[in-house]
Image (cartoon, rainbow, N blue to C red; front, side):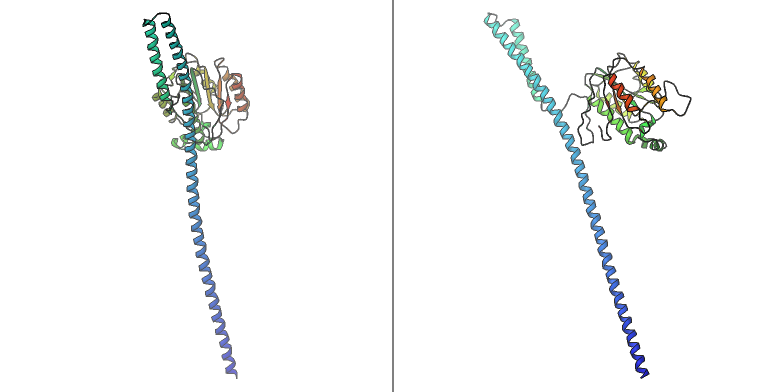
Length: 363
């Protein structure tokens, strides 16, 4: 009897072992299946995200292309309107000359020198009308160069881009590297190639490109850079006006600006003093900067400058400005200079210029 009882107990233990092993196998199979499902789901999600990113890039490229097309259409429309206006005026002149010829013939003056001269003028005018109508479909505008921004918005700037002698003053101080002081310090310790690619500095250069692309082709210009000193962007052009129509020279100015590494403090007084070297004096000024000056015409004996001192330096600088000349301010944002926007807006208003603080995707 005791032997039979032990056998039954042994049977029960073997059955439990078998059940435990079976349950463990089931759990192991479940874990394997769950892991494979999770891996497959993660792979599918990564593939879907990659497709979404690709579609977003294609949408961005499409929007940029749409902006370029709209700008081209606007230029073509403007050229067509101007050409049609000139053609209308020339047609009216033709009618007037033909009426004059008819009147001369009625008076008995036939085949005279005056009539022949009028006929020659009519032929020349007809050829001019034909040329204008053929050029109306040309996409070329009146600017010396073109510039298409990367943003997807159209802007009304209110800037007056007219004038015969136009100056662009570009701040090249260290603060033009970034909007915040900590980022300025960080970038200032990096390689020159990285500093030239700083977002804020690139926006300033693009602003100069945009302005030069809008200048009247018959006007003259000069681009002057300033930090603690001031100098023309193009070497050997101190006190000289450059022609907007000279496109290779204009491209050289742009290339020279992109070799600059922003550094040093800001002397607005020295920038305005440089205007006095130009003859004739400018009749339109564009100032691209990010704040009030940190020094006057000479190097200060201190390492720091207070807000009140910066205001005093600004008041000292504007006394050097030519009188009755519009000053257009393009102010980039800068941390820790709250009074800059107010005083520069007052300068623009008093000089009958304009003031703007553009967004990060302008121009």
